[in-house]
Image (cartoon, rainbow, N blue to C red; front, top):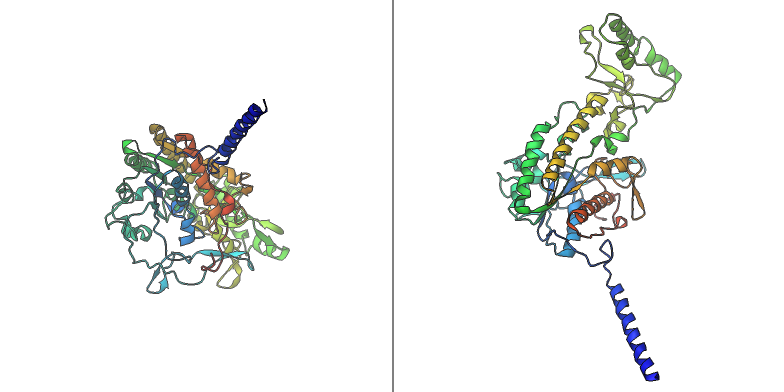
Length: 483
């Protein structure tokens, strides 16, 4: 009897040991602890197409550490866990950012920004980029995110000559981005494009220097790309377009940041200030040129206090130039002042204390995205998203969709919590965005990667847990060598 009891005990202990072993092999990289799987997707050859977001652009420049944290690069590390192959990136040479030529930094192309604690402002790092604009890289690259690219650019032959970011690694002078991507015979793709089709217009305050891509053009181009990328049942993931007006680039500077004392108010409201302008408006109204509503909209009156609205130029107002009356009005909460204006508002014109930008001298169109211009941007964005939604529906078995518009809305209206971090669209302190107010921080890119993985899991039956946001920084140090 004792002998049998010992035998039963041995069997019981063996059974417990087997259960403990099963628990020990629980996969920490999966959503449910079961072995990680790619589901029905094949990640062995992944290519990413897109714009500066796919490239890892951050802090106003493209630089190596930023590229390493691009959302496609983060995705590739996860895909590697289930058979994903090598993922190559056309890395910049250092962490200064942008390009050099002849030993000088190329204007408008870097260097990156860093946060100056002493002044609480972003400033450019010192130094010259080691990435020469004329140097061409050889080989193929999986990350084909191109800063500045619009949807119309990805299939444009000759784009290499127009965009140095693509030119440095394009297979030939006549190559297209999508052509070089497909030449690699990918098994899986990501495509997030369309933001720049409205962003240039928005960041320039709708001044006409960068027109919005017509939605009909976007529709034709986008559907053509999807047809090529999904040919033969190739699987992939795409994302829609957020409203750019929710970015911190447009929401950080208030419309009413001007503090004024009584003497200054008296000067500005008097006949030597806006009194003459307001009198002209009264004349225009009395003679039927403008309505009572427009009269009220355009009248400029300052008050003692710290919350005076800036004065702006608005081309949507009734043209009164025949009466020598300019198109000025106070900004309202429905207007968006662009981020660079915060260093411009309150500055003097030619050191003249009576000519103050944003106050006695109205802000030019480029500093403000007016409510009418915001409507133009949103109308185009809605049309782009309708195209993206229709393309996804037409390829519902092979394409996953990331609702980037809803994600951005969440960031702008309360935030998203991940790994104990609250991610918001607040400039600098919100964790999500870099110092340029448009492109994500490394932690923001990690959040994007996780959202892409969620969409992939839902569509293809994979079970990626995603990366821990705690492993990614928000701000880069000033010294490019101390990363």
